[in-house]
Image (cartoon, rainbow, N blue to C red):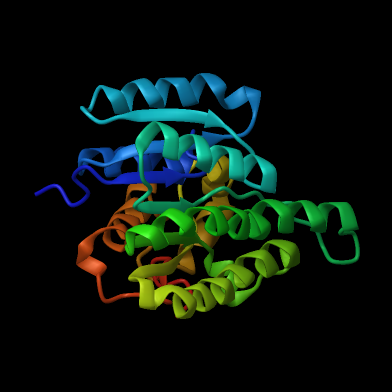
Length: 251
């Protein structure tokens, strides 16, 4: 059974990692995919993913768009509506980290993390709720982090941005529930991606795994599976929630 047959899904930051995994799983379940990437260095990977998705029998298109820029978000959503006609699902996945101890953290580093991780969720959500309200249906999924729930030394900016997403998610769920628009968050733990490859090596990797009851890092597919649940009608009575997909790290 295809859970997203003929649905249109937006995924930000999908050229690699978790976003790529979500795009591939959504396509397997029949969704048409509009996704973003931000750097020129990701352009080739984005094109490859676009081609791969199209080969799975769905409509797919990549956009170079910065989710941390309000004007670019507005332009992107406008073009998606022209190209695809509607928006059923929005996955706010774009994110960065600029880890540093608080004493060394600069205002520029703090602002960049907040802009990309938190402001982008506001910008994108503000744009997609308009067509969703008109259709009186929609699912918004915001990628938080277990660090937003637990905090972590050297990650105050990242933790603050991801904790902010959780509060924002609850507020949007309360505002838009009457329009049958659901808003939920996912809080991944350690996920095996290009960005976290250094965490798996040697004693450091074993130390991190020792703190995870399930004894392993998540795959991008693990997080994509939770995202699929929240995007589909399987979660039709779930809103305002944060699902921690962290292998038990936060117990």
